[in-house]
Length: 227
Image (spheres, rainbow, N blue to C red):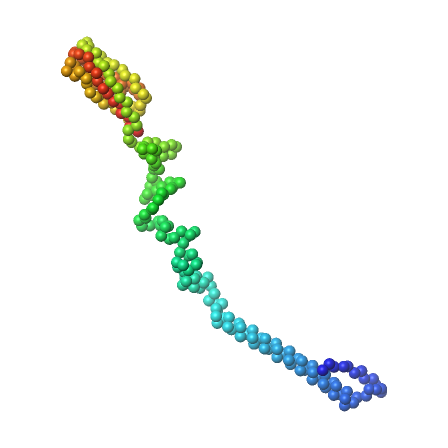
């Protein structure tokens, strides 16, 4: 009930009566009741909060909520099909990733843009250029072995020479350190009476010293240059 204040005046109405005293008592009682109700409500809310806090701590104690605990829990559900994708790296299955130890089988091409080391020793970079094997020498590609070129021809040696003579034969430029000359067939061998040889004297010339006391003869040759 709402409390209506009464103003009392000395020696004048209203005087102190039972009704006025009861009104004061009723107001005090109403105020006390309201305060008690508010306190009860606050205590109930605190009890509810305490209960919720206790329940939360029991479900996941703060002392156990560490990075190690989270990792341990994740590991229990990790694996193929888990949705975590933790069995791949950037979407690549672990079985398709090359490790640094043990034997490895590679299906497809292996590309190395930098140096390639085996047991700590850098290996030469190689490639197939057509049918020629080449290696990188640091500034360019260099062929590795094999036949680079073959030049063939026929030389006629005159008959009945006096003493030793020679013929010079011009060829395409070769590397003298990687070239040799083969002597081929001698035509009209029956009439030949002497000797003949071929020698590479520079990068563009074969010299053929000969002695022939018989008939003229044709001799084939081949100049073979390797890489």
